[in-house]
Length: 429
Image (tube, rainbow, N blue to C red; front, side, top):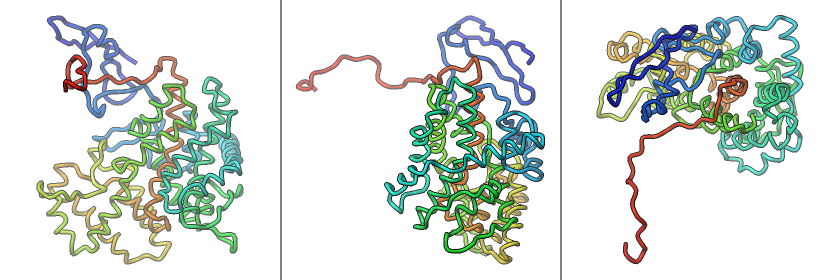
């Protein structure tokens, strides 16, 4: 990294701060000594202009529509690789050799079962409990069962915990789904790959054989890859913040799941699906487009635009292709919801209003349709997001723990409450 300086005129003095340059992306002004030097803080709600950490894992250029994992474009990983290969890349920094991949697949596959006693946890939830509520509770409880992988100072235990979380998350998610619909749990099958095994645990029943459709398994694989990591988003930042206190990895991931549950983060694909359902037919699109352009109308088009991407979401192109493959495989040729989606996409890419505001279709626009076609209820959409994002959370957590400069997260504030005042006895108030 090269270093230069930035100057700040404040309090009648000139203060200099180092400017750091990453391998790609914008420069960063290091303000770590700002308070010590000036007695002032920065004010940045939402941390939109603040780098909270140094990372080698994921790079996003929202203006150009670029998403790289360890330098590899997301479209190449989704088109040519599988999910566990992406997991290895995120965890270890390089694509695996054949021998490394076989070993990693073996280790993950042999950790997919959960402690049998954990199955009793589910009976403590109501059947109509939201699956994400179940996920928060059960994943947090993993630390009560796997004491041999909670010492964050031990590199071996950190890696065992990482493998366990990646492996057990789909099993727990499938159990949450099965419990929700009143069906018996299905155990993992070691001969199936990650995505196929997950589909089998979700849709198989004990009374008959279930064969996983390879086209649908490949679609599930892509969905997992496309959601594996996305830099310092809200849930990842939550995992890092929880981990900065020294909390065990299972508790940190449970914190990430809780954050992901928020509709502004993990629930976007469900919201996009609900919007397409509300529109219903292509004939009604002009009405909703007009409403979207009306500042006085609360209606908003879901699945368009992104907090980071100011260009076409690079994941959306692959997701669009995957959606068509799934609908074609299932014989869904005239899907009203897809017709509405395709017409909306065409309008968003040609209408000057959307182009000027850079409201391009994002991954949530297509993933909701695909997950619905695969047979998942909308309540499971964010759960699937959590299954995919677990590896990103773990990779980011592991990187943070191994960073010698990391310290406990402690944002500052701009206090606007009452200044100091004296206590008044209750009889005199």
